[in-house]
Image 1 (tube, rainbow, N blue to C red):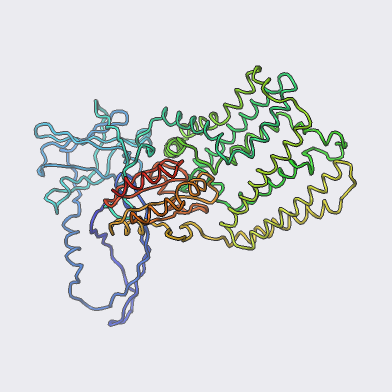
Image 2: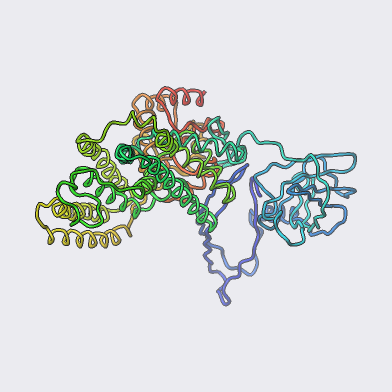
Length: 616
């Protein structure tokens, strides 16, 4: 780990036969992590020319090379440094060293997954001995190989600061390491492209370091309960209400509907959890709602919601065979059975992804940093919280008397519920317009129109109004053709990752935030996405209102928008560094570089109050 001005020396060989007096061009792509307690990635492309000479005078950088040489750790094997391990606790003892330890000592492992770097370290001194306490990584603890620590030990900030540094390998012996559990960390801090910019988490900003498994499960459960009240889930609730009313007519059917709906929710949550863990395992940075970053998924959901809208307005019915339905049966509510409730639960989770309810963000941020078992438990708690109100309603028979009796009103209710479903389909098309070029958008609109025509033709046969075979097959073929056009159009996708510039708002980047804070301005960062319903609600009611914008202008805020509509690993890693797996995330940096995480649901008054407190 380096701070300030650092040098990583290596040799470059010029091609044989290069004439003296010419210049060799060197280009490099550099990637780095700027770290405090957590890390933010950065990158740059460098190009420069170097003259080819027999010999040259020392450059201005020569002292830096000499300084780095003096600071290079010496490779040493010594029995005066010993390592002891008990469970996941490690103690390194330094005794009778020629180089003393006045203040600090640190161990930097050469290999990955040896030390749990997110846990704090501790130093204890007793007489002439110094002990360094570390927490072993889970994989190091579980390894069956002979334990050894290979790395660099730096005392008192290294030779240039008056200390020392050595590279060594320490055999790890089993022994008693009592009473050294690292102290709990109450907050997190992280730089943004500059070590002077740190982030201090607020009450809502619990990090993966400071949260227990029990707290994460409890928060996920509460978030799932609240998720039922979020606007993104409303279109699916209409389907559930109809199933509850229809199921109340038959004894035992209602409980089965509730159980199958719950099963659908939990299975889909497990699948999402598994997908997140697999993608994390292969090094991909993803988060909650990641599936909606794919234009393909958004397009398929838009077509699905179009079909559901056509069904709700009575254009056609979901039946296994259209010719088996006569005109009278077609007018009744389709009895989809337990399977319908299961798939309604699956659909509820899919459409809930754009929403992040209170308590959810911290819990899911914790989950994706833990083992697969722990992550699955958190996601199951989220799903159980989401399904529990409906499950209880179906398991308590006395509550069914509050449900209205089935009748003609259900047809009218279905038709009314088609309005939010159609609105959801249009909203998905708008999201798609932020992700793809014009060709992809037109292809999806054509596919939706062709699908509607095909379903209209199917409905005519179901209701006995005559056959429309040509239109039915033509619509189906046109839908497939449009899907092919989608494939061609989506290839050239729009890039919205940094955010579109708006009045007073700039595209986000760690470097831009660093520059703004170092210039003495307070900063507001809005991590958002077009498909995030919570983000759009907060934007319309709290963040982008005339009153809030006027306050930010008066207080001199620099405003940045980080658009996560399409996949962007830099944004994902930044979200993860704050203990979040998805948007929204709102950060307020003060002029000293410390940032506060705002709640996921905002009001205009609360937002303005936070702006004023941060600026002062």
